[in-house]
Image (cartoon, rainbow, N blue to C red; front, side, top):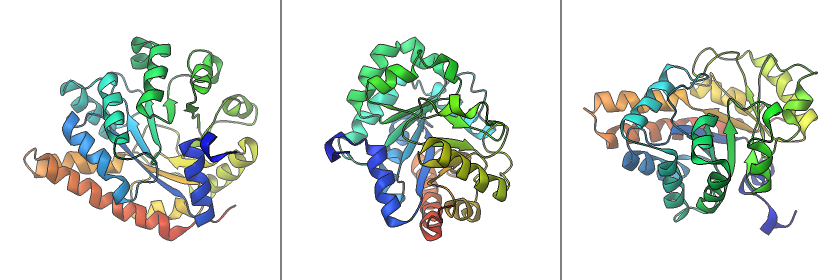
Length: 282
């Protein structure tokens, strides 16, 4: 694929494959604890080792999120954050960084309320690279997946331990960018997935989709990030970073800089672990 036609996500995964390692993908909630602090953190993540950034879109009913990310979404909503402000964050980020892929992860309601056509146009112009819409199944691809692909945005699907061989072809049919493997059945930030089962799932998803496989949910420690980094094409960490931000706000008497520094320190440790692991293709 010519470089000028290659998406930022594809370019990043191709580069990391040449380096023989997985991507480190931190998740943060856009607007948590407020617009300014969230933007500052976002802009600092690449220097802390982020290869791809996943931005959460706050919503009042985040059914797949654990307590940490639910609380982050509530803080963002309380600060007055919206999907439009998230796109403003992306535009500001892109003014300084044209290379790091950005993915928005959320639930369909905010995008539907914005207007799908208008959102996709604005998202592409702002510099968004991909979307993960948790509650839109493949049967509803016409709602947003296919329009997003037509607009030049990757649409990333979730596969879980319960995605069987009958269901998998439908899940990956219109997926692009990468496949996101949810390593545990349940909500974010809870138990970790069994290593051997995760490794087998990665093999299966790569073979079926021909795409890189990212693993997330339940990766909370440097040790776990290193372990998953030996198998996956990307390691996604969300709840641990969101928890660190929340704890920093409490410990620092709501000083955002104190909280941001704590998150960046943990991000550097996690990124270092992923880099040290390399990628053993299995």
